[in-house]
Image (cartoon, rainbow, N blue to C red):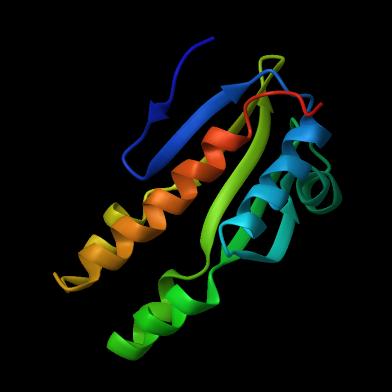
Length: 138
C-alpha cells in the first residue's frame, strides 16, 4: 500500500479500512489525542442536495483541541480564521483515504514564529491520528 502522500497543506494516507470504519476510527483517534469533532460535513450529500451531482463519499471533520486552540487564540485573536483543524475521509478510485491538515504550513501564514512550536505539537497529534487509522479494528 502506498505511504503518506504529502501535499502543500497536509498528509493523506490510503487505508485498507472500509469507509465507515475509517471514519469511526478517525473520530475515536482524534478524541484520544484531545480533539473534539465540532462539525462533520458530508460533501457527497451536500453536492447531491445543492447541485444534483454524484460525488464519491467524502467527509470533512472539523476538529478542535480546546487547550491548543486557547493557546493559539491568546496569542492572536484572529487565528479563529484558521480553526478548526480539518481532517478528511474520502473514497477515490475504490480506495479509502484519510488525511489531516499540516498545522505548521497552515499557521505559517500568520507570520508569528512563536506559533511554530504550537503547530508542531498539533501536527504530532494529527500524525498519530493518521497512524492509528490504518488497520481494521479487532
